[in-house]
Length: 90
Image (cartoon, rainbow, N blue to C red):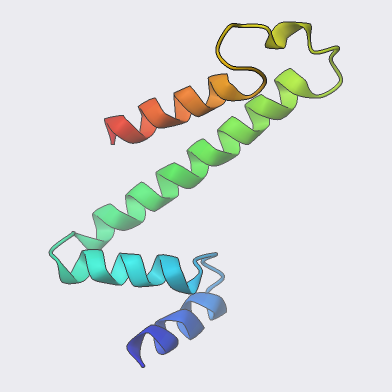
């Protein structure tokens, strides 16, 4: 019941959080995670996601893919490594 109400509030506030994500956030808060810190982490992850998508689009869009032979596993893997290192730092 609480999750249903939280999801309705989240939808009204256009948070972009789905029911599963809200459930995880609720569980984290119930286990002592500071809600303000959790919100800050979510905002930062969203900023990083937009930044990585923008980077991927600028490096792969409209090119002949010559820059993708970087011995890292193919196109897009460079941004995944950057994403993991960012998450690890948090």
